[in-house]
Length: 376
Image (tube, rainbow, N blue to C red; front, top):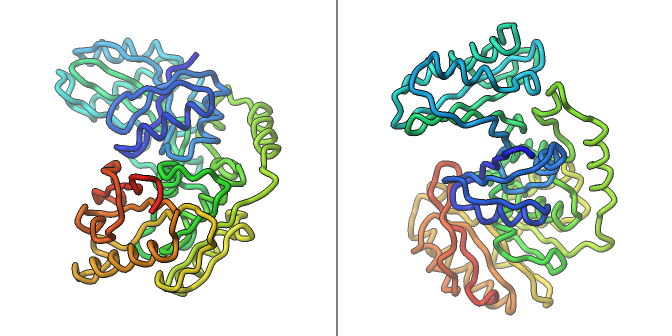
């Protein structure tokens, strides 16, 4: 069994733990924005393939005490680098030191590279930035020092997991795919009831909802760092993909997405085409006051404008008040989940939201909230 870590946006750890539970894995809070779990090589593959709220999956190779560079190099050289570093593939070491006698992060990174060279009997190609060198993206290695204890982790994902590959066109203030999925999971949507996003922008929320309802795993169409490891088992990966394709549900719910910006709708439709979800979503160009949802109760999940997207605070308050008014009139019996930057804006809707969970979106502190009773 391997010690694995799922990194996620701070505040969303409980949702990542919930997802791991759905895969039959037990996750526990490991730190701010980090969930620990144990698993096999197959579990590592499954986590990368299926987790919708995680940013990356890494393996903790070891954790040990070290107060000097010779000790660090000696202990790090005992790690099984040959299982993860392929000849010719560059590496990038990110060191972080807190309250430790070894505080020089550049020196720590250098000794880790030297330790890998000692073990492999060859010097690895060390990069200073995460970019394609012509030999592919570098293998990320994390060395974290805290109170003289060093934890060494190796990334298995490569590019962040929110990069599904379909979102090539964006509207204003794009929403990360992982945060969109967190909103949908927090909403309690059953993947059968109608789903509505009246501020869809470039379409991330309805696209992720459609992929969820169709049981299409988020990692089915991309590469991962573990595919370049010497011990990679392509047949096992192909078997996991084949199993995922067998699990598609027989009937899809009604998924509606609208925005008053025609350019945003064009971008959303293009992104949905690339994601293979265009036929599963009803896109329309209209203002929030013009929405016409079905009478059957469903879920509204949306990311309305906030922060710097509208300069006038009064305009924002009016927009949120209008949103609350329209939803009470047009969506009785529906639940509402939204993301916003301030409690006063959320309160402007007049809807009975709970405390929700704080997190980050594009470097801005935001809050993910859901109507307390589950319905308007």
